[in-house]
Picture 1 (tube, rainbow, N blue to C red):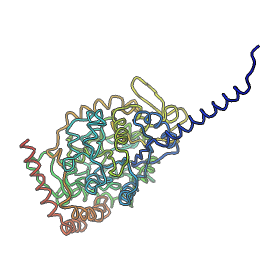
Picture 2 (cartoon, rainbow, N blue to C red; picture 1 turned 180 degrees about the horizontal axis):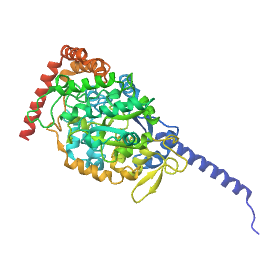
Picture 3 (cartoon, rainbow, N blue to C red; picture 1 turned 45 degrees about the horizontal axis):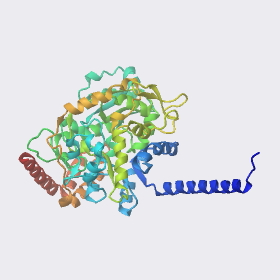
Picture 4 (cartoon, helix red, strand yellow; picture 1 turned 135 degrees about the vertical axis):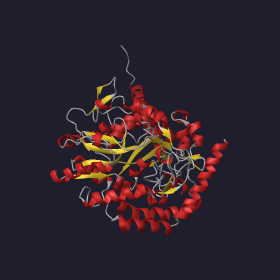
Length: 502
């Protein structure tokens, strides 16, 4: 018989306990030493944000050596909160920036963003190789890259969406719509026959952009403010800087908005993006004006709002300058973990699993495969667009949208078609130009304030252009428009000369 050594057993048990405690301590210590990357973007949060964040970190932490904190901020407050965060020197790692929200070039000028050139080639070569040099060049400011552009349809074809049920009910033939003005009879019909429904929503009510002028072929970003003050025509080889508020296209645009506003086609008050999204989901709008049209976007709109939509492209397909390629994510200058932050962005551009967790949430809880071979997904049984705990529905934002799973059978194949459009679109003559705002930063700030105060009411039909437009033009002059135009033209000419010499 074996003799039991009680002392030895007790010693082994104590040793095992100590080893277990040491292992646990090591795990806790390792977790405490793992950097956290705060990923800030405009979006609704959803009840399951924490669970999605945990699922994301299970995938990304072993690959980048850091955890990611998802930090969604409501669209209506995103820009203001980011400005306050930068001004206060708060901790910041990754932020969404564009020319139309959380302004990219202004953030560069203010020193808020980190230049990425060295990191891109050394730490994330796969990310750098994922997009052509022209795209990286398009986001340069003073020769430096400060942003990872989203991979989407870079030519911005603007147009409108109309709810399919309403178009069929009132026999709207989209082939007869050649200009926005041609929509007027349909909008009047909605006003007369659909009580409780507002006929149209205008995108510039939320962002203050003037995309309706894109039908005239303006570049859309030459002034560093989304082209709201000055621009060039995409095919004008002379690269003449034009003040948009003084063009006939802008006058026609604001005249139409005022006419439609007086007719009751728009909401009576300015709408935030969040308010509009809620009303769209409730079926309160019939037409979305001034929206980007692209392959598969009708299915995207259905995924967001729960209605079938028809779309009509109203613009010339060309490859914008700065405005097309400066929507994406930037690394904050204040970050303590730039390499880990950039590696996370690399995953969003190269790793299908990472992208779709951020875009759609957790498989089996927020989505499931309908046809895995076609990468087509849908909501799990019992889950809808209105009941799901996570559905940001912003696939265009996160990184490389061509990694995204399709959400509607009609969308299957859209990414290959979009890549073809990207390859064939005519580039703007200003593609690659980036304004150095330093010599005119005070004037640009003043002009931006004037735009907010005077242009937004004009563009949303709340002010009569007969008096409002001359007042806006006069205020632009007072705020230094001529100096800004002179400086923009000087930089355009120098850029063009250097480009020709290279």
